[in-house]
Image 1 (cartoon, rainbow, N blue to C red):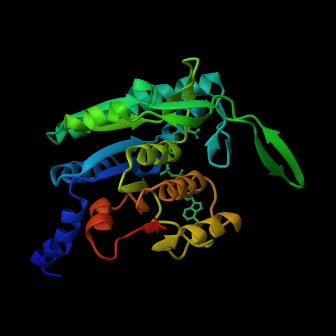
Image 2: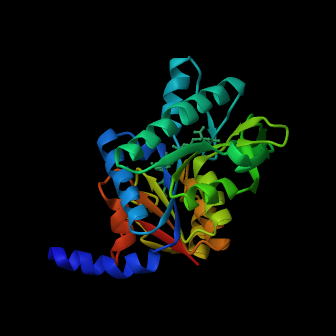
Image 3: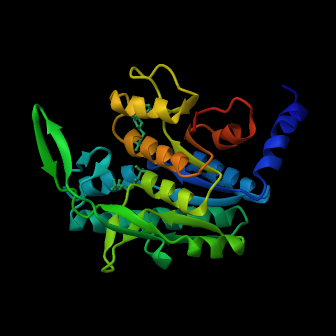
Length: 289
Ligand SMILES: Nc1ncnc2c1ncn2[C@@H]1O[C@H](COP(=O)(O)OP(=O)(O)O)[C@@H](O)[C@H]1O
Ligand SMILES: CC(=O)N[C@@H](CCC(=O)OP(=O)(O)O)C(=O)O
């Protein structure tokens, strides 16, 4: 394709997305290579300059795992959610709020744009309550597992995001929430991004991760388009596992609640964010009604 054709293909999308809100979730597995992370941030800044309201929500699961292991703690997950005791919550806060969030804000600054890093605690953005114990099948036996300091989001107050967007800042959100007694809770970043997208009435939710999209069981094929009933069936059939469970469930909830489309895209390939948004065929999985 000629270079001018690339621009012409992008133009209708640029027009369609102008002024629209897009929530981009940066997965921990899409942030392992610093050079690629820098290109993702540059792409996000470009979206802001073509007139989109960009909100970044980030994860950091792999880094929390590394820190836990360094401290002699064994990470455990149930349905893609980390079992979080008080010490793990402290590690998660240090990694997510203290390190990753700050790092992303600095990268954005380096691209000549202003960002503000916050967590769900700020401005009561994410209000949660401790999640009820989850039922897990161990062999033939169903057990109830208490996930500890993991939150279930009850309410989102997007006012702080509206204020930042109105002043042309890019908000960068770490997935920690506050409960009604002022205590912090660990939130899966996919869930946080989906709830924020719903509260903002976002046009799109984009999940950047380390796979090319939602895939078939032997991971040889990407589903480029999924409808809600198809996604529901895939979860029921057990095709979706681990970290993809909260991701796809978040996408489904977002689409059910007014977000026009939710995408799962490989963030480890350069400029995939732009290709997913501005080309006819896209590169990842797009979920819509
Ligand atoms: N059907 C599926 N299609 C694609 N990935 C899947 C599927 N089921 C489970 N996964 C897993 O989900 C992972 C992505 O989720 P996660 O590890 O939480 O990433 P992130 O840190 O980017 O949020 C993939 O690396 C893959 O191993
Ligand atoms: C409750 C829960 O699981 N919280 C996540 C928060 C970080 C996250 O979601 O990071 P990724 O997007 O990289 O997976 C965790 O502790 O790993």
